[in-house]
Amino acid sequence: MIEFAPGNLRVPKWTRPVYLVAAGTTDFRKRYPEKKLEELCMMAFRMLLEENDLKYDPLEVKGLLNFACYGEFADHFQDQLLCEAKVHDYLGLDPLPNVGVKTGGATGGSAMLIGAATVASGMSDCTLVLGWERMDEVRTWTGNYYIATAACKDFETRLARNYASYYAPMARRFQEMYVVDERVRAEIAVKNRGYACSSPFAQQPGRHTIDEVLSGEIVSDPLRFLECCAMSVGSASALLCSEELAYRLTDTPAPSFLTRPRRAMRGCTTRWPSRMAGGPASRASAPHASLPTWPTAWRASPCLLRISTWWRRTMPSRSRTSRPTVTSASRRTVASRTT
Image (cartoon, rainbow, N blue to C red; front, top):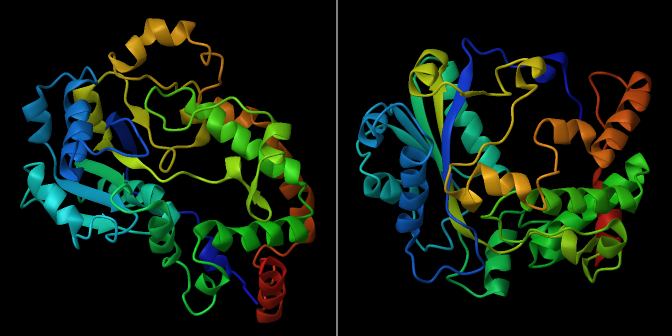
């Protein structure tokens, strides 16, 4: 039985706020044969330094860095252990302290968390967070096998050499335990692909309907084609700073949701660097301009509102220190239904 004690549920308290000052990205594609991995990382880093209207010269901003945090899903794709060390050197940041983060599908968020923690703790005033994917150097099925090795090879990988088959039992178990309709799951796919329309760099943007998602081909029951992510290539970066340094670099830093109350995030909007999608003017007239910006989008999303409403209704009847029980027997039952 899985249980949380009160100490496990403690809300983190950091010593000072963290601000997002600048960001950069490449476009994301199925294949990117004309660029090496480190070149893609340099493209994202260069955009961060040069295309965010910062008050400092790009080399001056680079000279403010104290720490770097790199995220990648796996070394398998590049056939290069310690790929973060290679990228760090290529960016001209060696021997600044740095770490590599690999937490499967949570790698991007984990890298941002570790980067923000270095600033919040006072260890760094200016931290670079940079991540990448490089999945085009092997066939799709080989890539799926690589990704599937992140699962427990004693139990989960045996379900199938496909990562969708690793998540499928989780999706079905979640539906059964919390009586969630499959249309709620489909709304999440609609939301995510709809938000991708706001970026000129997204790999698979699309305006889909719930019925379109549910009528799609099943990849691994109950997950359908539009609910599954794509093999991808690209890089993205972010610059996290202390409050004092953030306002020296820009007049409009974004407070991190990790260290600020929710009310501090209200009114924050997404602003792409000027060359992206032709600049603000073209974004205002674009067909996707009506999409709500985060966090308005979070509050307005029907599926998230439905889930949060369900959670508020059911939580009073649940212990604060417990979570749903997942036994070995239930695992075997779920596995038998999906094999």
